[in-house]
Image 1: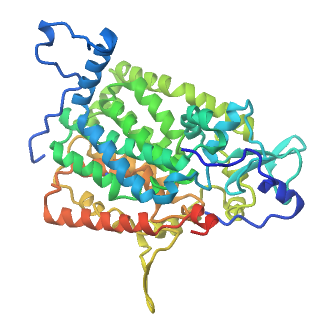
Image 2 (image 1 turned 90 degrees about the vertical axis):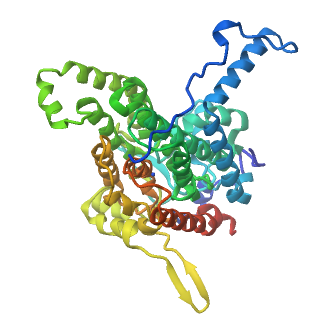
Image 3 (image 1 turned 120 degrees about the vertical axis):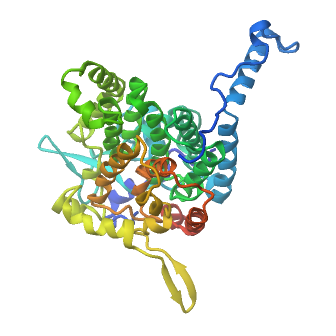
Amino acid sequence: MSRSKSKHPKQSPVQAHVSESSPASASESRTAPPETPAPEHPVVPGESERPVESSGSTGGRGGVVGAALRIWLAAYRVEVVLFLVSFAVLASFSSQRFLRQSEAPHFVYQAKAWLEGRLDLDPEVLPNLEDWACVREVEGKKVRCEGRVRPGDRWFVSFPSFPAVVMLPFVALHGYQFNDTSFGVIVGALAVALFYSLLRFLAKEGETGRERTENVGLALVLAFGTLFFYAAIRGEVWFSAEVMGVAFTCLYVRNAVRAHRPVLAGLFFSMATLTRTPLLFAGLFFVLEALCPGPDRLGQLKALGAHWKPALRKLGLFALGAAPLALLAAAYNLYRFGSPSEFGHAFLYNNRVNVDIDRWGLFDLSYLSRNLEAAFLKLPKVSFNPLRLGYDPHGLTLLLTLPLLVFLVVPKLRPRLHWPLWLTVAVTALPGLFYQNTGYMQFGFRFSLDYTPYLLLLFAIGGWSLRQRAVLAAVTLGVLVNFWGAVAFRGYTELVRNW
């Protein structure tokens, strides 16, 4: 998972910029009986009647480990198969990218800087000037670097940094050469398995009536029938965060349902938020599950005045789980940018979006129309001379990239989780709709990946069968469109390498 690359190139982009002006940045998921899942801790026949036998060649410890591994594989065999299948397909579509680090390995460089004992980045080794934050001290105030680079300017990753934390042990082994592309494929395959595990858990808890086959089908829809497909095969800072955010979302929801594991829910929530900041709004799901899990939500809310202690305890434990990472991130942001809530985009160096940020800020009503267009109205581009099918790098309608949306509007069932999931989708979508950037360059509206798992969960509880012809047609269309995206999209890596 490495490529030959010197830690100190002859001339870094920052060094080159010192000698001459740099151009502006080039950027940029109940009609049938519930499934009977494999038990999480299956009992080996006769286990209570006899001790675990050791393996003759490896000794007692090896026999215990082997037995534990067999039990684990029996419990999670479907997840393991899904991981392996997803990995094989995603790696194949990643193609030549899989063998090399992407051209936007920002999290790798951040992890390496931490391992070297520094909180900022070494400007001499930056691989490019694309979407980095540059901070300059002017009269004791932190401001965005403008114009030529100066000595004393400090460079940081302009995104939430938790993906760099996940990469730390691997960067410790491979250094700056760590392959973020193949790592992203592994995380993508793991996210597919985690989503199936979440669906299986919901079926076991009686929240859905899905059988194992349909849960496997929905996990594969996430993998290959949504924008997740092309995002998982690329590496690159923008897509790595989206894919990792999906994985942490699955872990968060798994522990947030009925608020049954509040500390773990809080921990995974903080990991998700520090990977993709819009996922902060998904905390509403846990709040609803803690305060009014239903079915009589209004009655439960009215009763809170007299029975507030259990709900408060769950919220407190949730906050306890989220607090350690949240406090560390706030302190890190304060050190870097002078604000605990600033992750770096206000300090983007020589970026095309800086004009809008300076005029309107990072979020504003004026951005809504173009983001709605990117999410719902943009269609493929068809030319006839020569015959060619193209896409707009600003976006593509979700009705093509996620056709199952149609069935969410007319569900057959509205079970307990219907409104909590819809409300979570709504609030999580808001940041992307009011954001200064549509997500360019991209295939489809990539910010929708923040709430795609919740959309697929809405389908899972909505009563539509994957075996119905209309549903099968929608799934097929989604797979074809996202297959096109996986094959046709050319992003920053291809731009730099001229592929």
